Image (cartoon, rainbow, N blue to C red; front, side, top):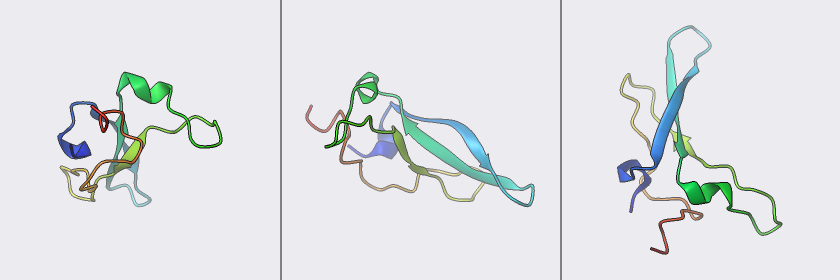
Length: 74
C-alpha cells in the first residue's frame, strides 16, 4: 500500500515559507502502532512520512511506503 492512499496518512499543518508564501505540507502516520515502533537501537521512531510539493494542494511526493509501516505485514 502506498502512504498517499492510506487512511492513516494525516497532514496536520503546513510549513511556513521564508517569504510569506504558502509552504509545503508535512505528512505523518497516525496509525496506533506507530507510538510503539522502535529502531535497531531501541529509540522510538518518528512517524514523519514526508513533504508535499510546493503547489496549493501540496500532495505527498512519496510514491511508496516507509520501511517501518505497521500495515506492511498485514
